Amino acid sequence: MSHTPSNRVTIVIPVYAGERTLPALMSEVEPLTHPQSTAGGHGFVVNEVILVHDCGPNRSDLTLETLSAQYPFVRVVWLSKNFGQHAATLAGMASATGDWVVTIDEDCQQDPADIPALLDSALASSLQLVYAQPTNPPPHGWLRNLTSNVAKAISTRVLGNKVIGRFNSFRLVDGEIARTLAAYCGNGVYLDVGLFWIAGRVGHCPVKLRSEMDRPSSYSYLKLIGHFWRLILTTGTRPLRLITIMGFSSIILAALVAIYALQAKFYGRVPVQGWTSLLIVVSFFSGSILASLGVIAEYLAVTMGIVMGKPLYVVSTKPTRPAVRQ
Image (cartoon, rainbow, N blue to C red; front, top):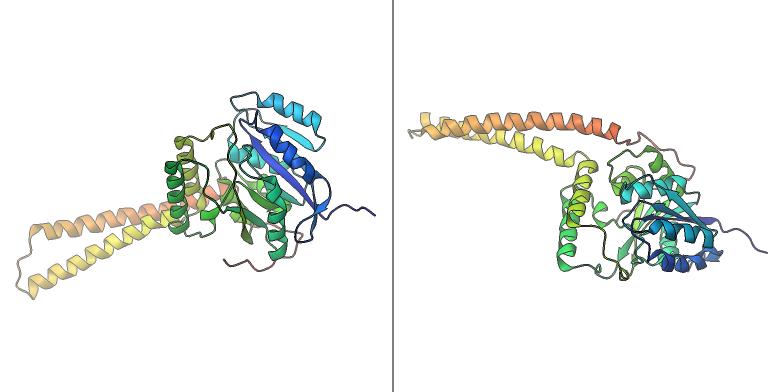
């Protein structure tokens, strides 16, 4: 007797320049639309594929119309103009109906056959968010790979978040988390930062990346820098607190130099040069300015959190379990 698998998966694909790659990708997804089991014995089915047209440079629109007519599981979301990958992904999440939402790129670099492994990782450890963790180097040039690693190292150490440094556009998200984020998330928010606002149990699953077929990446270095800057702005107040720490450190330095100068003048019989008082004044007032800016920045960060739509709380229908430590 057949039954509907308990895990319905919606695949969301932001489409920018997928005219040539999407037909091959849909042919790979099609076998997953039939009820089956993962290696871990969990029943699942891909109940829909949402293709979000982000108004790219080629005729992807014609390809989407053809695919939606060819495959009954394909749904198309048409955006009015190019809003960017993260906004397009959120638009797809808002329309998703599955128990789980998988986000995947259009360039066939990520293999849909790895979706069952992501699902097994999520169900085995009760995770709300699972990122694909590539086991092979990304198929890009050495300069782009180097800059990407540097950016992730900064996000991991400077921003104080070990998990965010290992994010990937190939991810499995609890359906409730995905739809809630799409409802709350404001303009300019880095998608993965928004996910960390809500998801408390995050894990990674090893996968192998493939080549990007016959199309180059649509991300220039300027766009990648823009993504990194948005990551910095939306991660939190930690970078802003560096300003406050620098300010207070400068004030402390001024106090130490003043104490040393006074001790040398009155007890050491050492003549104190004019530059000493200048150093004290500059250190004290520059430190005061930085400390004041840091406090103002904290207030601005609170305001930005409200404007960007960071939720105060999120109610889930599933039991909440302890976060997985990695």
